[in-house]
Length: 562
Image (cartoon, rainbow, N blue to C red; front, side, top):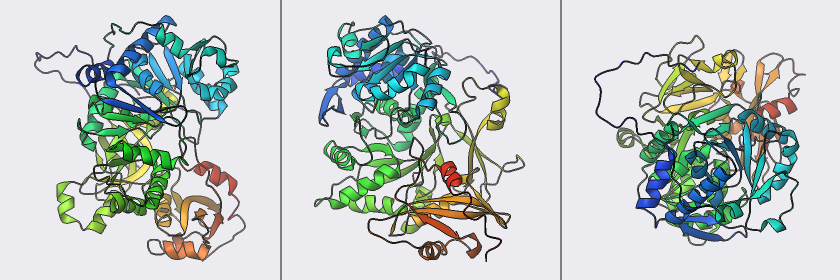
């Protein structure tokens, strides 16, 4: 599965320095040397904000690398990080891979069983953990004997920290005792710099090990496609413990952006996040509608609306609602940029920016409808749509196929997974995403559903994603989830979970009436449930496996329906 399926042809030799390796150290070293006075703003333990420069950060990166080396970290060592979007986490993004070690991203939202599996499967032997997450570490520690050293990150002295973790070290003590300079090795660009594990709702997490080369090239792709310049300010809202925050830390460092690190935050921390975004002049950020929609509501409450006309908000996880995109642009001038990718793709695959030809041809309402699509494939990534027979589907905006991708930052396999278990995830060197989608004549990708989530009713397919997004445009609906449940006559029927807006009432008739503008009568759900919250995975995606299990018998007694 890991072999290149295409023959490589050698031409005439070049005179270039092709032996100079592409690695992460180059990015942070250049930023510190050339833009040493640029600011990095970070949230403090007490909820306030502080700042330091790239030059000061780079000195701590070097000290941190020397500290890790003193603990026995060497090329190939897997070092886990259990932390928020903090200053120390940012420093470890460079210190660990700079030693040719592997930074293992530990999802603090995983259940102890899954987190223990990730640590054991990756071969992690050293873990750096924020003091606030000691309960998480202590819960999993007895089940991971391979971890020999725990490094506690805190502003408190070690004497004030109480933990049951064995061989616990104090990060700040180690950093203070280490030399402020280091002679970095030139790391083979094909070596793994980091690892992340999938957090799907089926099976064990699967490990993806990213190469230095992959993240280096991916950084240029992010910067080019979002239009990043030296004048930008990037705020990392997406968790740094999953999918390397979409590669935005590396891209922002490549372009020497001012960087804002929000530290520990929750979805309800809308006010502090929004206030910092406005105060620091953020022009690029990333996140999901679950964060951006509350930010919109917070901005709506402000007496004076901020001018965010330079802000590009990269939105992933789920399709951004039209109401959110319109509201942000109308109130602040901010642009919502729909982005698409996965753990397996580093993650950038597509990004939705308007081509001049579509901007000239489409009306404002048509352009907003286009923004719902995942966007244009980025240069360097090749996308195919594969139908059920394994043939390429037409790019006509209608014909559906499984989205399959290939490129220098797309994985060719999974860590410790036998080839026989991988074979269904790859085809001719392309990774099979499990997403069903279309690509229109302009080249815009639209994901219509997950193969496992598409609703199969009466021999036809119904897109749960399209149904959810239409429901979210209803003024009395705050959140919605749609799944297919077994039905004795129709194979499956759509079933809906609704979280109403504050104080609102929503009936099944309301749902059916609203959906009837885009769905036929036979496609409409015949049952729904009002809930206070919708089950989600550890990274905030709708947990449809859980929903299908909880409501599996809802239609079982129906012999037929109209």
